[in-house]
Length: 330
Image (cartoon, rainbow, N blue to C red; front, side, top):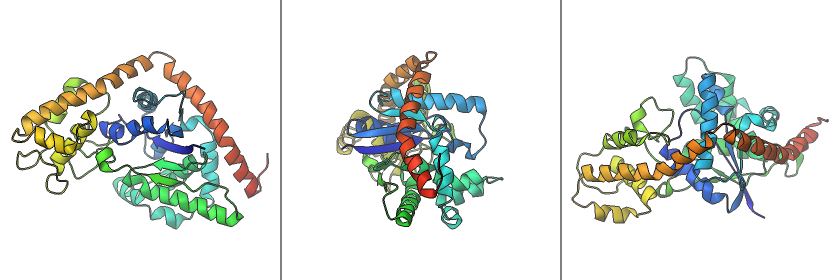
């Protein structure tokens, strides 16, 4: 039997080339090797205030970008988290099996709580909703970044605790799938190469959004920070900025890092950045064209409606099983 893969992306802002190279492009490959559930996790985005109009459009655009980037809704299940009530239902049941101390130790909770004037319960229990997302589908593999690895660990802890309580496998214990950086696992900020590229960054020059027009992409790459010397050489520690740009170039072109180093020996940053900008523009062009097609009235809505039906059907048996184990009945 095929492995089951679940992964979700928050619709909190424009998806970046880091999201594409580091995750979504890998999704399109995984879908032919596994049964895949790809979810726009809109409920997760509510841990901080959202503009309702902007959020609604971001949800649709995230789904459009899934499909435009190669995820086939006839092969994979593409849906919105809030359209499948089982996610919220299971989340509450799992919260009753999770310890407050576990949640308070989450690094992301501590980091984000420091930056907010008001800390909501949702921010604290975010990892439990993520656990519900994953455990509903008998997930084997979860593509996650390093920043989400701790959340997957608590998902595993919750599943194992429940399985031990009932002395049987109520929930499958998932494994992480973390691609190496060389395959796009971690694309860094254009402005702060020590930080991961983030769609929620307050500095728009730090990321390339998948829907950025060509002239904006060119400006952002040409203004990307570089290292003190002009040598095009891969060294994550000594030359993090240019190393990051070389990874983007490699992933967009298919050229190896060694080949890029040889091609730009003695060239300096100007020519390299100019070529990279055009390469990124051409990489994103077909995605942007497909998004325009998917923006026709009703197109993405129909895809998401079908996806929600498939996801709900897949999720219900696990939800019902756990409800029965806890003593609930219909």
